[in-house]
Every structure is written in C-alpha cells, then in structure tokens.
Length: 288
Image (cartoon, rainbow, N blue to C red; front, side, top):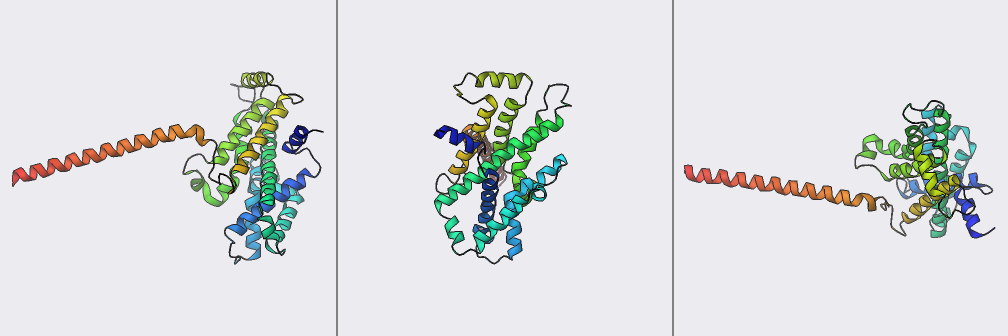
C-alpha cells in the first residue's frame, strides 16, 4: 500500500482503532483548552474542570442529536466519556502529562485527531438528516437541501453557542465554524446525495479530474477532510495562529469596500458637522 492509500485511509478514518483515536484526541484537545485557559492556575474544582473539558470537546455530540430526535452521543457511546476521563487524568494528574501533551509533535497529533473527528461528524450528520428527509423533499427540488447542510453546521457550532450564547457567537458576522461547515457539508451533500441538476453538474465536473481509484463521493470526502486537516494545523500557534481563516481571502475585498464606505460616510458627516459649526459661528459674529 503506497503513501496515497495510507493518506486516504486516514482522511476517511478507515483504519483500525480510528474511533478510539478520534475520541481520545478530541477529548485531549478539550481538556488542554481548559487547562490552558480557565484552569491555568489549577484552582478550579476537579469536577468543574472535567465537565468543562467534556463540553468543550463534545458539545456538538452532546446537544446536536436532539434536533433530530436522536440520543446524545455522550449517552449512547461510552467511548466519549471514557476518553474524557482518560484525557482529564493525563492533562491534570499524571506527572509530566501536561508538559508531554504540550510538545509540538503531540499537539500536532491532537489537532489531527480532533479535526478528523469533526470532518467525520459533518459527513455523518449530513447523512442522518438526508436519510430522515429524503422521502419528503420540497416540491421545488428533488432532494432536501438545507436540512442536511444545517444539521452538520449546527454540530460544529454548538460548543460556541453553549459558551458564548447566540448573540456572542454571531455578533461579529459568520464565524469560521459556520463557514467551514457550509463548505464541507454542502460539497459533500450535493455530490453524495443530490439527485437534482446541481449534484449532476458537480459530479460531471469531478469525473473529468484524474481521480485514479477514487469515486466522486470518496473524492469529496477526502478533500473535505484534507481541507479541515490543513486549516486546523495552520491555526496552531506555531503556524498562522487561531485567527487564521482561509475564507478571509474571499471576503476581504468586501470587508475593505465596506470599511471604506463607512470611513467615507464618517468623513462626510464630520465635514457636514464642521460646516454647520462654521455657519453658526458666522451668524453669531453678525449678530454681535
């Protein structure tokens, strides 16, 4: 098996103990976020720190299934809670555990495991909603479109909604997790599930690429996972930092145009105010 096959197996989580790998490193990422942030001085009560780490890691799996009337993954899958217990002990109680997990190679492995967990979650939640709604699509299109995509987007944003609140998470525009979810979920859904003209067109374009052994569904799955791996790694402090957002390259021109408009409006208002003051001063002088 060559390198490309190994890469595809990883990006599609098609390897032995993949579920354990994803759950453990997702839990480690949650525990490390709390240890590096709210519990930096280690003054939090142990259960408070544990619960925060669990919700930070698995808020999507904890709350998002309820939208579809499904049991929470935290309750239905013992692997999630078991991973959180192991991660919490490693980060907070094992001598040298926190320092070891702070080393770059393990930080990188943590990001890769957590991003793989998120990428597979998007695919899974798109399919869950599609299978639930496919028998009753809108009369305007043969495939349910928005439900499957939004179900996957909600999954990736549930943690931020939980911690920041609805207003706090959205007040500065569309956050990166929503942008990421829309891109990956939409591309996968239209290629894998859409029976309408949009899906037909996208698939007809993909088959023109030199795919090798990949079919269209596997191709879009691999590319979505690869995109999330790349962005997750670039958002590490050792590289571009957590504020890095590849979508800014697309939205930057619009943001620049908007800021220029606002500046011009402010300048115009300032000039108008100054003119009014001058007129008032002239009228006062004449009266005197």
